[in-house]
Length: 415
Image: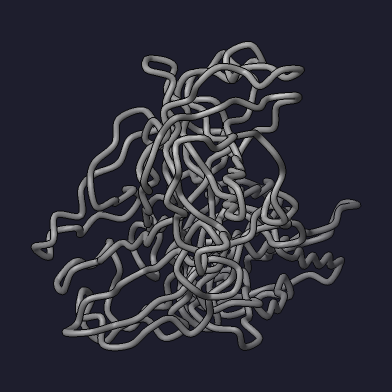
């Protein structure tokens, strides 16, 4: 955003429509440097030159005391006025300076199996001096707790080339987070797909506005194939970024890297919008009803719940705890596994009872959050299934020979 400074008004002997060389301060006013303008800062300027006038954005250069011109409005059909050599230049505020913050939008298009992500103004048009995008970034220095405000007044796109998979898996829903890097004042669009492993996640990358990080150049040759990697048109090193929003493909792509269809949802990031890794919803169930089995085949226990994800791209974290029991007097094992529907999805364990044990053996199970990618918005069942190692021997889970309660917890997580 352009900065404002008080009582700043100078003469200029510049002629024509080019960069202004600033002269001395008008009587009763201050020069740019005396008013406090720093080298390289962007200000909103206005020019009065007889019957002609102009307002715009300009970058001040202390060496040579010059000011560039990017016109917002003018009496010359909104083009730069031709200076006479006796104009006055001053710092002021424009209507655009009072535009709402975070005034941007995102768009996506596909062509020749490539995906193009575009940063636009809030009205959906290309950023320009009259359609300025203003964004705050954290400082590029980790120990500095200030914001840097940047202005985007030109086209800004990122192409994910044909063949670049971003680590996606065939026909598995996914989400791309769109970010903007502040590369020392050059704005670079970036994209990241956080989840490694598709329907069986093995890692989920961190994306947050407080991070200073690096990116990899997309390359344009279909080789941007890793999940958990920020891709930009030009690589950046140790730069801050801003989350702009996300794009979902609710059914995935038939062939990863063949961008035959655009996103099924585009969402800007902001207040009320869950961020990467945020908990979207929690479902919990408890039971005091025991489940028993004498079969070596897995069957559902009473420890079960259903959750309906709000997005097919989101993850579900599942955990459970409860007491298990095996009858004494024989070698046996209680077999336990976590399932989505009828499919075992990650955890499988057992409890043993030794030979000759005269009494029932009790032991607790406690399994932390397992990350699953159900890939649906339909009601999804998670259940603990049990079996016995030795046919005919009785096992229980959960069981309540002693005072206890079994618990299952599921959390929907933004992918």
